Every structure is written in C-alpha cells, then in structure tokens.
Length: 320
Ligand code: F6P
Image 1 (spheres, rainbow, N blue to C red):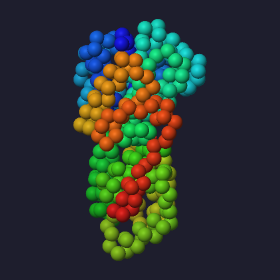
Image 2: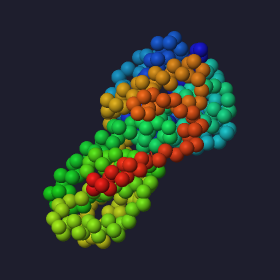
Image 3: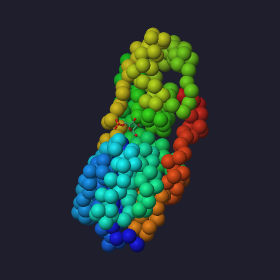
Image 4: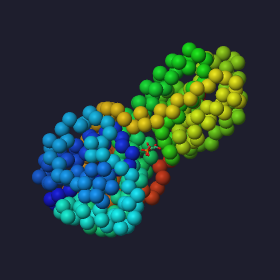
C-alpha cells in the first residue's frame, strides 16, 4: 500500500476533470493516503509546482468546467532530461504513485515517464475528443457534444428563416467523434469527418437539387480535422450559389458545467484510479465499455488508434 500519491491534469482541459480530481483526492484521504496536486500539467511537475491537497481543497469544484489544477502542453517534458527532472521532483516530495488525467498525448507522456521506472502510474481518459483507444467514454466528451448540439439547434433556427446553408466547424483534430455524434443528434444533412472521404462537388450538386425542390436550409457539420469550415463554406457558397454562412465553434466546446454523465463517470473513474495506484497497480488506464468500468493497458492504449464506428458513418448517410 502506497502512502503518498499525486494527481495531475494535462493536455486540453475537459469538463469533468475537476470531478475526477476530486474523486482521486477524496478517495486517497478516505484511505489515509497523502495526496498531492501537480499544477499546470507536466510543466508544473518539472517546475515543482506540487502542493499537498486535502478534502477541502476539492470542495465546490464538481460543478465547474475546466480544471482547477490547471493544464499545459509541455515541450520540455518531451525530452528525457525534462522527464527525469519531473520524476526527481516527485521523489523529493516522497510521492510514490501518480494519476494522470488527460487525452492521448498526455497518456503517452505517462507511458514515457513510466519507462523511467520509479513509480506506479495510472491514467484516466480526459478529453472532449473521445479518441482514447480501449474506452468508449472519455471525460468531457458528453458535455462537449451537448454544447455543440445546443449550437446546432440555434443555428438551425436562423438557417431555416433565411433559407441558408450553415456550416458548423467543431473540434476534433484527428477524430470525427464530436462531429458525428452532434451531427446525427442535430439532424445535420452532411457530417464531414477526417475518417471518411467526402466529395464536395457531389455534395454541392445534391444541395442545389434539394433547394430547387423546396428544401429550406441545410446544416453541415465539419470536424476541424476534415478541413477548414471557412474554406469548405466558401466552396459550397460558390459552387451552389446558395447563401452560405459558417460558424466556427472553437473553445466554447471545451468549457461549461459538466453533464451528469461526465460528473458521475469521472467520479467513478477517479475512485478506481486512486484505489488502483494506492495498491501499486501500474500502467493501466481506466475507462468505460458498454457501461462497465474497464482497465486497459497504458501502452496498448497509446500505441493504438481509436477509430470512428463505421456504423455511425453509415447511419449519418441514411438519415441525411
Ligand atoms: O485535444 C482536444 C482538442 O480539443 C482538439 O480537438 C483541438 O484541436 C485542440 O484540443 C485544441 O487545443 P488548444 O487550442 O488548447 O491547443
């Protein structure tokens, strides 16, 4: 049984990271284990921005988006020297185990740190992109998809009043999950994702035809990884001659009070991660599959790429 553990959040923030951190901290306190917060991700680990947390430190955060610990993307941590410095800082506080909450890149950082040896490492998938291999759930994705859905509903009102095409660019540098889920739920006519090919010319011909036969408006959701919404909107406007507008939702998708699903699942995963690391379990990521908690090998998780369910791509085409 370890006596002292630490928790950090890393990479892009996501709603529910606070709930997960709170669960890690409170579980450790409950188990009589000392718990430290590493502020500002791996950069804070290198800069020794490490402070002891109590049960009170995580009061009043379960309802907040973002991460009270702060987060950063650290270039120095990508170097072995940086990681060694970070590990030495953990050791100087007698920290014996680590919980990392973050996306694919952050978990890859955890795997690299683990290769240096020295302490058990457990990961939790925290990213709005829902692109961590081995889990069908990531902390924050549900809140983000609902934020996007709200925007689609609002854009639909104005699109239909003006008989316009509205292109909505959503996040997802490598993954079309947010676009696909919000697009299907929002009744989009087209959903463009990096994982599936699309033919703009064909799309524009079809759009023209449907406007001629009376369609009032169209909603097109574009994952940023599939191309720039602004460029795609310009092309569509030019090729169809139909009044087209573009909305780039941007970082609004990352904020906001976490949904029930994100608070609950983050709390469940936070407890699991803390208990595992305290008992010396290492190199695992906890996630959910078909509603049940699963533990995935950390190296498998970062060495594999999660793919978008082709059934969803097919469904989107049928329902368009
Ligand atoms: O990794 C999550 C994510 O939301 C991506 O979808 C997006 O491309 C990226 O973060 C943007 O992050 P930032 O602007 O913080 O670098």
